[in-house]
Image (cartoon, rainbow, N blue to C red; front, top):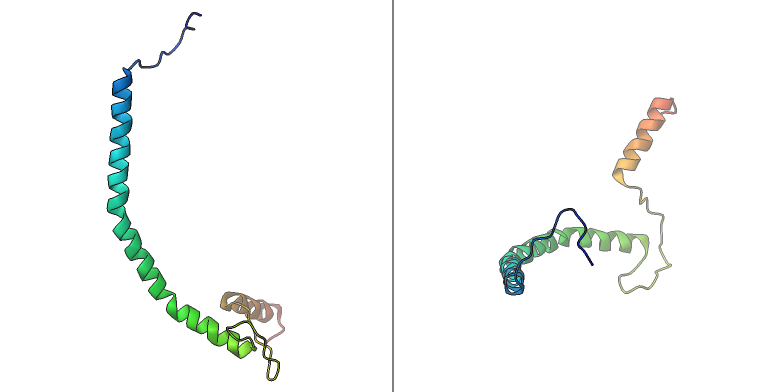
Length: 102
């Protein structure tokens, strides 16, 4: 079968293709291994930053009547407003601008 006219691919020897592939794999492996300590450090910093958030979440759950082990305390459950602060601010602004007041 004849080759159609147009752009022809670069004909490289098989050993050169294998060598290029091995070089690319080696360089990417070294790059990923050198990047690993920075990724681990970033994960450590993020996990330390999440400690206060999990403490607040635990406190809010206990105030809502849920215990951390999954059981539900029924004796003194009260309603807890879980609306995010930005939505509360938007609702206050909407009430003020519509003339309802606070």
